Structures are given as structure tokens and as C-alpha cells.
Image 1 (cartoon, one colour):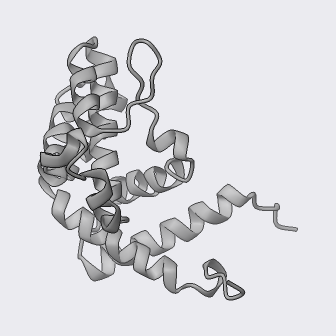
Image 2 (cartoon, one colour):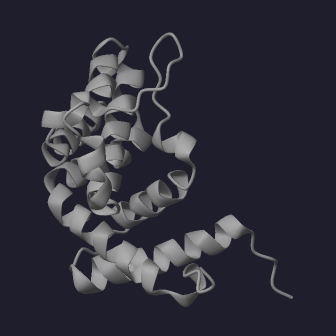
Length: 176
């Protein structure tokens, strides 16, 4: 008898299948570590607290990229790397999966009004990739460098992933 799958296992398989199909078949990007990274990001960002996990030194949640960048500059190398990786994920997540939210995130009354999410995402992934202190971080650095170099293509890929997920009957609420 096959072991029972948890909800996270089911979502992981779903996200992995759709992401692999989109990136490998449609976009021609057969980079398994990149695909795994994106699947893990999708799973991590299912929780809103993960999307807005960066906090300043007093514990206040940072919700704007400008504030996250400023906070990263005041940190030691390892936390700085993690904040820049998160900024890359944050900007990729919204520009790829939820571009319709960008006008709200970059409204004239917000600090992010003039932030180029694509440019900042590329820059942050590049900065995060530059911090390599062991073998594990070396592999992740390679993926982060690729995300920096191919940010626009990854954003488009995530947009397609969302479209595919939205088309699945099990994710649609037909009673609404």
C-alpha cells in the first residue's frame, strides 16, 4: 500500500509538474536545480508570513523592497545574503505570479513607487549569489546567479505557471 501523501506533498507534486512542464517544455530551460528552487519558493510563499518575513532589528515587518534593501545593508554577510535572496524571491513572485498587484505595491504613496522590481530582483539575486561560504551555498549561488541573469524569463515562466494552475478544475471554486 502506498503511503498517504500530506497536503504539502500533493502541492509539491502539483507545483513541480506544472513548473517542469512550463520551464522545460515551453521555455526550454532544463535546469533541475532552478526548477526545484522555484517550486520551493512557491511552497514557501503559500504563507503570507513567508512573503513578508524580513523584519528590521526592532522586529517590525518590512513590506516594501526599499526598506528590505536598506535593512540588508545594515546586516552581517549571512543575514545580508538571506535578505537579498528574499528580495529576489519577493520581486520575482509578484512580477511573475501576481503582476496585477504591482500597481498597489508601487502606488505613488509608497516608497517602492520608483522601484524597478525586475532590476532590483536581478541585483538582489546577484548580490546573494556572491556570498559563498560552503559547498551547499555554492550550488544555491549558481541558481541565484541564473535567476539574476534570466529574471525576465523566469518571471514569464511563473506567469505561465499561474495560468496553468488557474486552469486546473481542482483549484477553481465553481460555487463562487
